[in-house]
Structures are given as structure tokens and as C-alpha cells.
Image 1: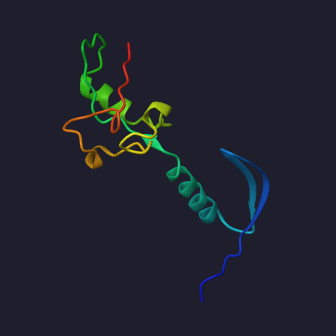
Image 2 (image 1 turned 120 degrees about the vertical axis):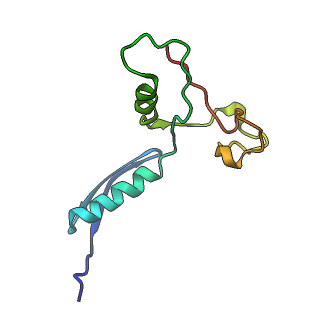
Length: 112
């Protein structure tokens, strides 16, 4: 018979974008499960296309593109996109009706 878990959560404070709590009477697997669920709920973007105008470093383009692609980018839709065709939601490129990329399904970053 598997061991039953009855974890306890004591909420210390709640704010619009933050909650502080104490998790007790459980093991690390339960804490890790909660951590992974919370991380998955934070909207993030990932860089999937990198174009180089001039690379003057000793690192090759593919290496830099790979490293930049590993950066998680938090995203919040600007007010200018709200109320449009997408009702303020940022679309996955595969779900968007545009041919290539548009302001509803992509964000452009420029590094100098």
C-alpha cells in the first residue's frame, strides 16, 4: 500500500503577482511538483530566429544563436494589441492567420 501524503500549506501573504507560503508535512518531490507547475504558468517567449548583420566575435553564429535561444523571456501584451483581432492574446505563430510574422504572433528584439 503506497504511503499517503497530506501536505499542509500555510499562506503567509497574497498579492496580485506573488504568494508567500510554507509547505510542510511532505517530501521534496511534492515541493518540486508545485515549483514546476508554478513555473509553467508564467508566460514566456523563446527566441527561435536569430539573424546576424555582423559578428565580430570569435564565437560562431550558431553558438551565439543557441545561447540566446536558451534565455526565457517574460512577456506581457502591450495595451495596443488588446481589443484587436486577437482580443489581446499573444498567439502562437502556428495559430496566427498571417503569412510570416506579425505583431500578434511575434516580437522583435535587437541587440547591439
